[in-house]
Length: 276
Image 1 (cartoon, rainbow, N blue to C red):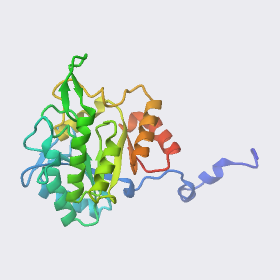
Image 2 (image 1 turned 30 degrees about the vertical axis):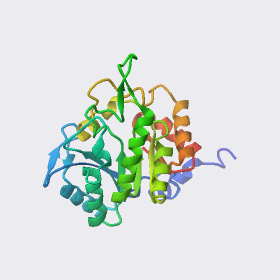
Image 3 (image 1 turned 180 degrees about the vertical axis):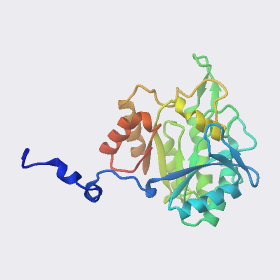
Image 4 (image 1 turned 60 degrees about the vertical axis):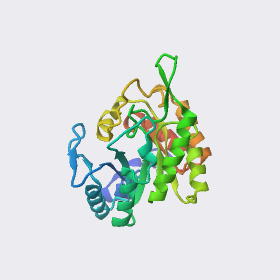
């Protein structure tokens, strides 16, 4: 039917009617709170490039989590800032690492809150890259050793799960990261832990404030050899498809604002939760 029998404005007549037929909604249930956690006690260190946000000691993070729980926020994602860094990012898999301590405390003090653990190395490595780096004769003079990084990722994921993390979120765009983490979790008795994969993570200057917050800026070079090329659309769909095949329970597109077309296409094509 066409006009005048069909009048699309009928369903826009009142606020209540618009609410009734609204296709897209945003609720507190959709939110995840990022927290940046460092050693110490009573610490709320301002993040200059994120006004109103702070690096927190574990006790302060627990306070934030409890308040967030009262507000109905269902989940937090944790990023650790260690006192000491090394080439391997070894604190990422240390049972007494900052993120492991924080996970245990949050799960104890705020039961029911979903804890997502960022599983990457840029915050933990002295060079600020997302894995094991080795020298190369190529243009950049270095390369991220993909398969060596997978071995450390597996150790970090299991350590986070042992500490009580509900969801492991690998964010380094390392080939095979989901398969490796899924296998490691299952082999160690954590088949119930979900994986939120940063499946289409584009290289972007928008990460500047985050790198300040997590103290994870690369000390040389950039991340373009492992994060996605900004011009590529079909590659993003391949990355997402690969992660789903390897066992991802949820996928992420990042950064969201400038890649809403990718967010929409991924949501249309794949029947699983999409984070942004």
